[in-house]
Amino acid sequence: MVCLKSVENVFECSGEDMSGSGFNSKIDYGDESDLVPMAEVRELCYKVLGGLEIPNHVSQLKMEYDRIDRGDVVMKMPFQESLIGNPINGVMHGGAITTLLDTCCGAAALSVLKDLSFAPTLDLRVDYLSRGDNQSEIWAQAEIYRLTDSIIFARGIAYQNREKPVAQVHANFARLSPKHTAVMKESIYAILGRE
Amino acid sequence: MQDFPQTLQKLKQTGNAQDLVGLIPYAQTLGVEIQTQEENRLLFVLPANHDVVGNPTLPAIHGGALSGFMEVSSALYLLFCSQRLIIPRVVDFSIDFLRAGRIVDTFASCEVMRQGARVANIQITAWQDDASQPIATARANFLTEPLELPSS
Image 1 (cartoon, rainbow over the protein chains, first blue to last red):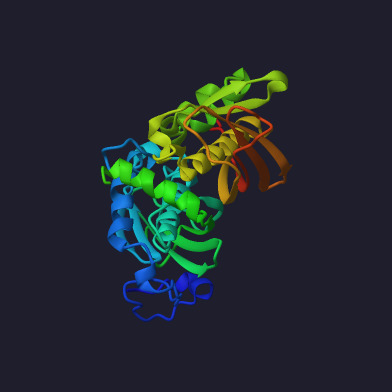
Image 2: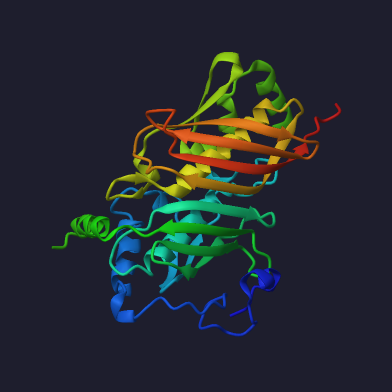
């Protein structure tokens, strides 16, 4: 995979293949057996946070998960005239790009939890690094670069051309208490039609 | 859109802010409404709609949809309220989520903290039932590029 040279200093890319990741963070997410199974994370993303059965903003914007791995998520969104923000040059609105990045960071955050649940976003900052084009699909990749008992730190990029990111994001998420996690898990299972 | 500067100038002259939404497809997609209040203050509304659901268990509004609503509101505010004819280009956007947003109407107001020759700094506050209990606050920097009317 091509390293993102233009954000080299930010993400400390080595230029080498990092098992499919554009980043180079080696974070200890904890013992794999203590973490939420990836199959459950993917099901949550595909069927509850996206998908066509329940109306939601992810499907309204035609966003798709390309890959969901532990602390590392790739998504894409087709170019859509309905998302144009600048009627003169026809590029998509920053808000649509922010939504893609928020969704991507959010999925990465819930993939490092200990149990099936959500991690509410505390805050998010997007820097629009370059003007997008007015025809290509847009990709996003997010990773978790720091974990504490209370907070999950995520960062990511959006790009149409990997060599020239359109935007960069930093987003922080809160871990829910064990009590709230249990309530969330129950609600998620209810939506998935599971016991 | 070739006649955007003329159309924008006309809307600014007639004071019809709601028609601005029709010029920005993303604002239309979200269903943004603009109400003009006392002293020409603009109130932005994101009507309750299941297309903006992020977490269906609560259900809660998608953080990205809320961010997008606040960002497009601030851009519309600059388009409409700048003394000059400009188009804003966002440089950065930062949001703090204070409370979960429910699937009810969401409101936003904007305040320009500084409008320089090239950059505008703007703060946005969003709330639902109670304006004193904001669900999010945000800030953004925009490059404000001058628009020129055709000389004819």
